[in-house]
Each structure stands twice: as C-alpha cells, then as structure tokens.
Image 1 (cartoon, rainbow, N blue to C red):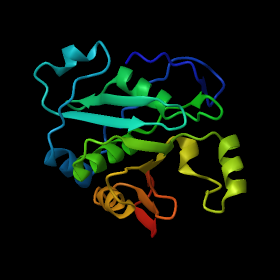
Image 2: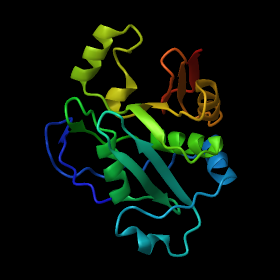
Image 3: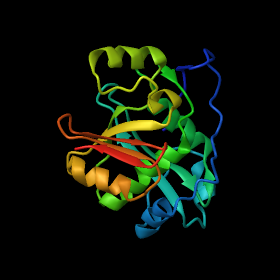
Length: 205
C-alpha cells in the first residue's frame, strides 16, 4: 500500500508527517508480548524489502475501518526502528475521518495495540472505531455521550477504540492490561476496548 497522505494536519498544514520514534519506550510487558509470538508478514510498501533482509524482530499492525472502508496491514517497526513510510500510513489510517485531519499517532499506543493483538493469537484485524480526534470531533462526541473525556487522549493521538469479532471485550482488555503500559477501558455495552499510552489504569466492565 502506497497511501497518499492528503488529510489536513491538526496544525492546519498538509505536509508529510514526521516519524515518531519514542525509542525509550521499553515496557517489559510489551517486550514480552512481542517476544511471545513470531510476527511474520510481507510488507505493504515498496521500500521495506531492504529492511527485512536478515531482520528477525518485526512489529505489525492490522486494522480495518467500517467508516472509511479502508484496511491496513502494515509492518511499522523492524529491528529497533520505526519505519517512516509505515508510520505515515498508520497515521493517515487513524485520522479523524469526520474532519479529514491526521496527526502523528504516538508510537507507544501503536505498540500496545500490536502487542495485545499478538497476545490474543488471532489473524482477525482490529476494527478501529476511533483513533485521532480533533477538538471539534471530541466536543461533538462529548455532547452526545457522558463517557467522552473533555481532555481525551484521542486528541493527542495517544488512544484508540478497538473491537474484534473473535474475542470478547474482556479478552481484549486483559491482553492490553497485561502490557502494563497505559490505560485500558472496557465498554462491554458498546463492544469495544479503549487503549492508550497514558498512566497505567483500568476502568469499565
């Protein structure tokens, strides 16, 4: 996939997104989750082949969006490095589709999502319900529901709301919480799990 990033950024520009490294984020739970399973997948962007030669440590994210009809199956991290092209596609995929606005997603959140997915041992992609939100979208959702935080980490590109048909809310939440790397919220009545890279905490049922 060679996605053309056309969405407007949160600062109003339409320039290419810069890579976020956050290389210091090495929570033991996340490392253990990645080590527990071998991630093997063909890259979906053309320049990845060179990186993959001889590489043994790969992180992958697989999602689809019911709102946009888009699917992403992306290797975004190889042997200790976040791949700029991969993260650009992840950022665009997780954009605020209502405002057609993208931001640089915090790679720590992507790592939590990927590690939890590995732990669940399923080939089913996540259904992304909400990734990045502009302040306008967050305010609109907050007016509709009391469960939306005024200072939501979605507005910082640090959170995602996810669902899997093959796994329960409880199973997904347990996998994310096992990483001990951020917040995990259970929303059983709406059938999704919130994951973020904020303080370690859990809520919901």
